[in-house]
Length: 192
Image (tube, rainbow, N blue to C red; front, top):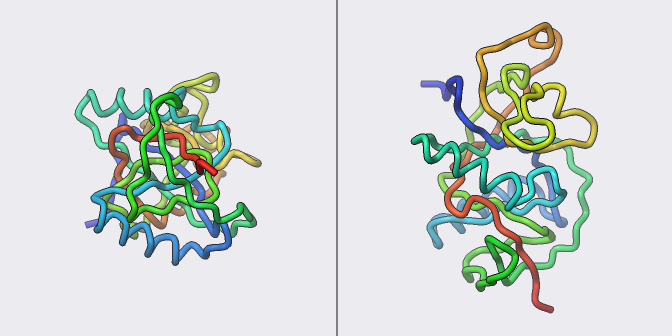
């Protein structure tokens, strides 16, 4: 049975690719092992579009309080991101209280990380024209209009609206799916 998203569902959309000198297929395999060993993993990222405290945590809490699962919908792409492959050894949900990263988890070359489990290959089209930005300064803007140029991630809500752009814009080709779990997104750092 194909995976489907229903109106009102919250999703975190992200373009993914090679990162910190590691090919995407190796990252997926490593994250799968980390989830098996630690029960969860960190999916590292950067940029302020999906800031842990200001965006991801309130977004995820809001949908989870309504009984929803927050999915991380990942669209593979060619990536030219060349961060140094430095492992974070600490994480924090609030930037104040820091804890050690589980020894089985390696989050490399990132400032932030999503907390995930149940990572799996799942291929489906996500029509961004049928989504809207769920919070922040661009709240209500269609996903199609928001995900342009350098914007590669967003907290979105699935809508029933299609609009004119739906017929003109190609959908996001999702290749991987994961569940976000509390605390949803964290800061990560290396003490050295």
